[in-house]
Image (tube, rainbow, N blue to C red):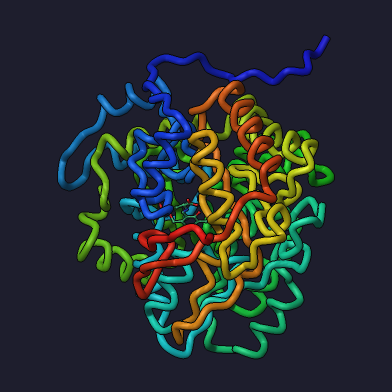
Length: 457
Ligand code: F0G
């Protein structure tokens, strides 16, 4: 007998209180935050779905590993434990710890970037793009067409458009220092890349003599999707699929705040000796000595343990199912979302839900503020507020206006998610009454973090 309910494969061991609040209190809090959810005090949020990055719950065994941390400046045994755990999944020759993913990006693109160079990806995450552009290089997105269509049900919407990549590498011969592929494709909806696509991308890169790097933040979720959806992969251990993904690449950047279950951390790993030496020298400038990078010994130990836990099949079955649980309930309620549901988040299609709000009046912001005010649920606008401002200061609608509800790992229970579903249903039932926003102040760059808004009359 198999039961239908997939339960959380853990018991709660330590709890943090949620402060309950009323719609009136939340209206006041969000008004004084200039209607920018990044400016809220997190105490004023009940269910925080702003990000799955660094917000998960560590396990008992990770907290125990923290006690084992050795804080020696050089040659700490905690580094060996960390390096072995990384290499058990990603057998790259050099492992360079950093304080988070973007620090690894900064280092590798300082080494590889520069004016006249181009770095393709399925879809660059915003810090990846920003770190490439900061060096004067160009960041190019080459995801398959289905990956840009919110309603396409393709099982691997994160796949690289291999034909487009081939044409790009031919046209830009000599000016592409590396190809990246993001697993899962966060900016494209948390969608996975298939093993077949990784094999094709890898073979193509090798034919062109260009190294392939993984942006591997959500590698275990990607591998679980491969196991579930890709013909012939059903009987494999996720750890084995991960190792194959790594063997197809020449290096990786990593934010350990995602699948490695850390509250902080990251790394850069690669095979090329000369490039690794250059990267270690850059690491020493801003992050620290190569056996700790930007981390404490205890952080390295917690990550080593997290890497063992994240490839557990019971965990991944629960993780992917519980994200789909939210997505399925919203679809059933007629609320438009990016389909199929990704690994770490559900992306609400605010433009679809609020067709009466023009993109330049920020339907994603309107929806995110409404979810917060109605139920204390904090999501993140991913749309015209985030991407609409052009280099010349003008404004254009983003490709989509989405609100991401990202699920922190092992943090919220099914009743929390049932509550989120109810809040979404309530807000959707009042959609026609929601109004757009205008920006009253904004910085020159990355405006979504600090802009202030006011509701339109
Ligand atoms: N790459 C991807 C695909 C990411 O999703 C992130 C972070 C990074 C790189 C950068 O890592 O934050 O450790 O410096 N994504 C978070 C998010 C912030 O909310 O999606 P970091």
